[in-house]
Amino acid sequence: MDFKVTQEIRVCDELDKKRILYDILAKIMDGSKVIIFTTTKRTADELTYDLRKNKFPARAIHGDKSQNERDWALAEFKSGKSPLLVVSRVSRAIILKCIIRLSIFAHLLIVPFN
Image (cartoon, rainbow, N blue to C red; front, side, top):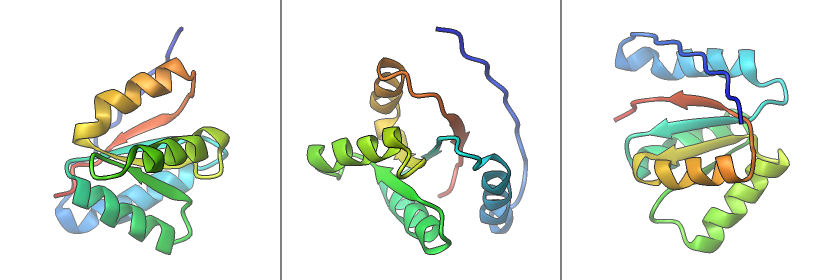
């Protein structure tokens, strides 16, 4: 399986992170799937809530979610119903294995929100 990876790093202060994230999402939300990695479970939930409040179809996956919730969120992501998946650091390896195994192609964003 060949993957084309483009890496872009933006240095900004804490107050500009969400604005920059929303700018990036506005550019790449063309039917694409996007995975956003966060540092904590709490941040994953808060960012998902904020994205949904701003009309971005997002779901969160992290270790405090039940297996049924994680399976449902991954199915929503795979189907395109929720093309934004917010994942905590702890869940990263598991999600990446699932994404590769299911052949889901997605943009990956690492957002170090505290």
